Image (cartoon, rainbow, N blue to C red; front, side, top):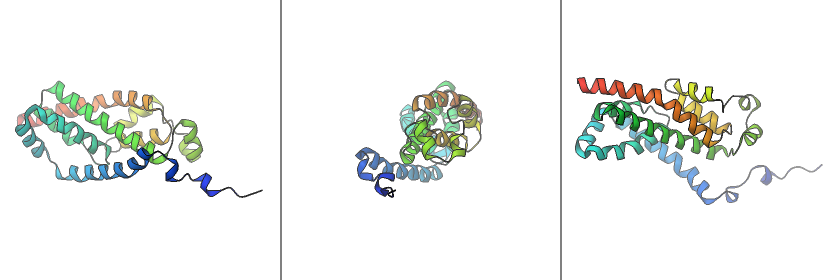
Length: 195
């Protein structure tokens, strides 16, 4: 009985494609910058940007919203501000798009960092109790996202580490984002229009 070669158990960075090695360094930095920017941004800043740029501001706020939504900080202020700055259907679309892109970024980041490629791979790498979690269940992906503050991050983390396919995750995330985008855009339309 010979001991296993430690190099076989833990693949080195050299065995991974260059883009994965770059993303493992760049994505956490982007998320940290998003966190920093979230604490620097207020609704007044978004209103000033909208007044300065007009409709072009949405091209800036959607990627900003996506990065902030992927970081572990609330991005609700952007959806609320969009609700007061744009017509309601467009504000809902912007909020939905920002959250959807952010969830995709977060899912892919976690998938990259954990190295999980499939549900079978997840069962081998994850603790037994976590691998039993219904990560791919539509009920979990939709209802779990509705938990205030942590739902989006919880569902993205468990789904990515649990080996849920990207297609399944994106489908149910797209559905799960709709109620929040409708509600917060309506709140923003009411609050910012009455101010």
